[in-house]
Image 1: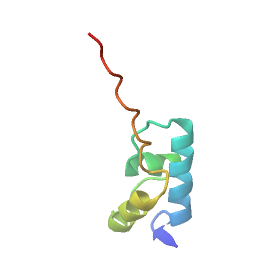
Image 2 (image 1 turned 180 degrees about the horizontal axis):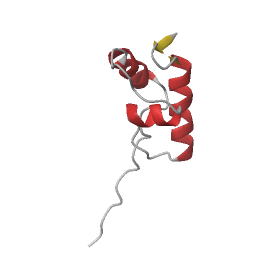
Image 3 (image 1 turned 45 degrees about the horizontal axis):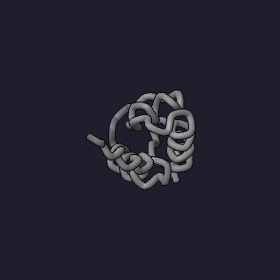
Image 4 (image 1 turned 180 degrees about the vertical axis):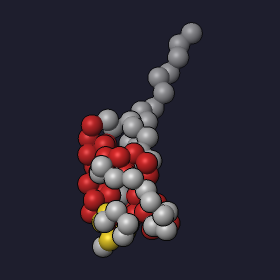
Length: 75
């Protein structure tokens, strides 16, 4: 499905960019701007942003992995 008509970005493109960024750095903060840059594109009119954000949030790799449990301090 086309999410951004101005830049011809599909939901598949967004998920692929998120997967690529997460594989490159598991702790990275993924933002719409970073997704656009990863795809070599720039936001234009902004009309797609609600659908873009919804697609981004639903991408399985969007969320950070659970943080490890804190170490117990002795002392």
